[in-house]
Length: 231
Ligand SMILES: *Cc1c(COP(=O)(O)O)cnc(C)c1O
Image (cartoon, rainbow, N blue to C red):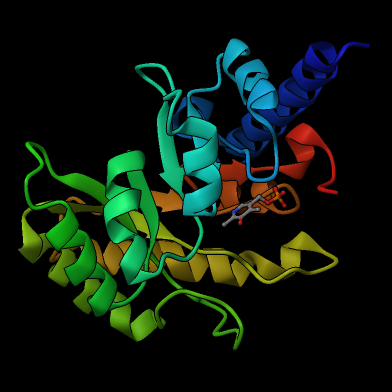
């Protein structure tokens, strides 16, 4: 098979997983978007994904994304998201490059992004990243800080809090992280009472997207199941 063919096969398998998980949960599969996580993948691979009709791309490093997309932006209608942790000194570059930032996890970053986005004509959508499982090495705010952060984002006016994101712990049996996804959904529901624009639930990756969708994910972020293992 050519690279394009094997990518098409992998994407079809993911679409089937999305559809089956949504059906099990009594949800419409169309309410779940699939982000292709293109970190470490070259531009040719990205373009092959776009040819399949994928319209959401995720990168975890500003510099890598600049190298890949700076001189050759994604086509209109494709959303490029930052899903990796962001240093405040890169906020300006991130705002210039990305359509959505999923990794907002502290007030200092909200302030830096707001300064960088000050002259935008429309607010920049962001997600609050939550470290639901409170893993020591992981980015993301504490569950109890998410509401305060979402309000801080909303108060900037130039950033728009549109959802929450989490990275679940790596486990053997994806069912073990179901409580993590459930907690994020409940958190979203609670915070939405004071921040009504908070809709998106970005949760679930190659290993655990099925469980995440059963628990309400509106976006899953898929790398290895689409493109193969990272070198
Ligand atoms: C790499 C990455 C993914 C994709 O992980 P896979 O296991 O390759 O599907 C999703 N989300 C984030 C934040 C990542 O860094």
